[in-house]
Length: 193
Image (cartoon, rainbow, N blue to C red; front, side):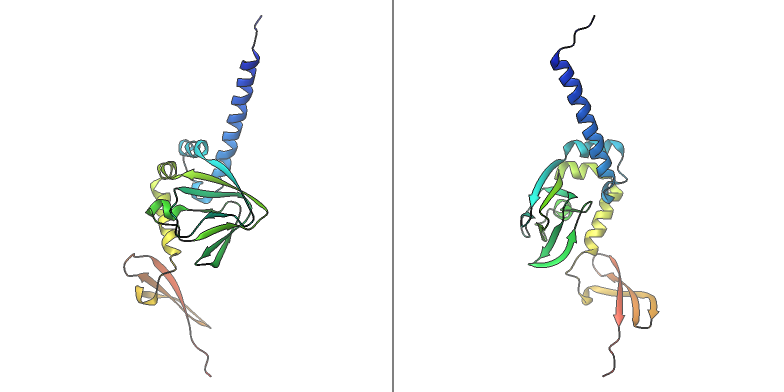
């Protein structure tokens, strides 16, 4: 006859719940674009390290100009991204932000504010985030950040060819002179007045 203590049963149940929770977090992370190709080992490492935080309507998650050490994935709710006080996009479930500050050690380039009644975010510390991402995903994030650069001017671009011609204009392929980032630039002619 075996005797099992209450502590042993509690430990087993807690361990099972923790494993289930870990598997659920891993599954949730795999649904986020930036994490979908992570190895199970890296995904597990991230899932173990993430923390959940709640935000309420009007609360800022990050503030433009401040330095941060966290990456965020939206689990639920909606958030407004503002640059210099102007709204530039809305983010929702599965979206993420904060990668630029972590990759480049820069101040936050925008303020992100909760716009739903309640919202939940998963947060990741810089060290674990960087260690968990494979080289191709870091390159993807770098390319994504470059494409979102709002400081690009026409003088920064060099013509690289024509992609297409339509009834309302021409789409040109251009390259940023210093970064090499490629863009499609739509050129629309002015109507005769």
